[in-house]
Image (cartoon, rainbow, N blue to C red):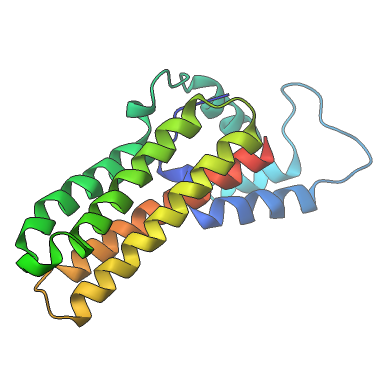
Length: 179
């Protein structure tokens, strides 16, 4: 039950537009195959994607056969690599404590995404993606702590990367729960 995700899967407005389209569709008569609905005509006029366009886009997507091809895993892995570059720059007295905890949290994010990838069933997958979210929030706190302790980290960069992974995980979990 895996598929290729793109940026449109994580846009908050897509879900809202889909809900609006469903609300506007009359319940009386379903369109026949190949017939254009009022929603489709409106969407074409406004330059939006029609239901048929969305269906065709979903059908074109190849299934992902490895967690390494998931964009969210790639971003989480890149963030973990940044953490491993950052931790040696922390003060020596923090190497056994804060630095180690940061590395463990950073590794847990892509690890849980990878583990969730091979799980069966959307609820089971979503559970591991949620564990990744929890580890990501821990890591976010460590970044805040380093900033406030004035350890000289690139907080804004790291916070933006963390937020990006967080949004991608939110979208992934939402899509799992809809399945």
